[in-house]
Image (tube, rainbow, N blue to C red; front, side):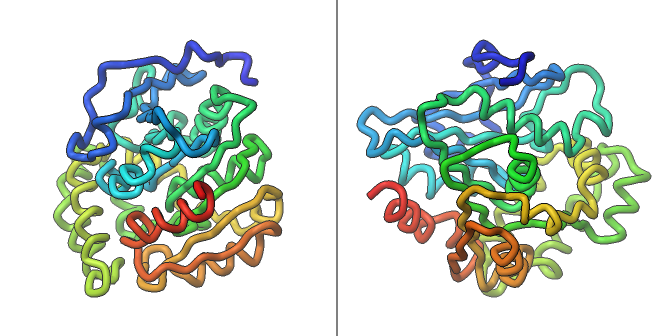
Length: 295
């Protein structure tokens, strides 16, 4: 247990959801997670009255992800399992303690954030941990250091080398966040036509576009500077817990080749293939999760 951290650091709050259109939020509560450096991340917590399992789900969404992305999945399991949807520091809901800096968004700091969240969860309950994309990056760092011990981990679109295009890296280094935000239209076009397979999965492009519109580019700047070129393949052999890797054939941002490589390097892992990125967040994932953990 972190000596600077106790259960009083997870408290009710009156924050407004970033994206109140997500249905699962309406039956959930909002919690402030006060970290050991004074920063505050936000968590959406749901506890069903007649749950099917005593397990707890912790979901760590991807980079600047908004709640809409996970609405179908979480709404469909909300009556069956208690869950925490945790927003990491690069998201707009993060509240720093003082001015922002590189250290505020360092790799060690975000890994410690996850440890601090886990330190508040009941020790007698199994924790099922889901991480998508950048959420998986943070989870891999924590697992490889044995900071957390979930019952089972699901990594969706495993991202073992956080990279940004060379021009974005240069702009991030030289421009403040407010000026970076002026490039939103170009970022959306680049992602839609260069990075993603919009022909086979238009939904992925639409959700990234909405997330970019709502993003805090100062948070993005410091996170990208910390994580750019952060390879993790050399860490995977250190992970001992059971892991499921989910990849999608038509997800160009998180390639199925990278997912397969990740599976081959983690001892207790298996691979599950989906068709596209949308399937990894919607009913196909609901069906897989229900059959695997709620039956």
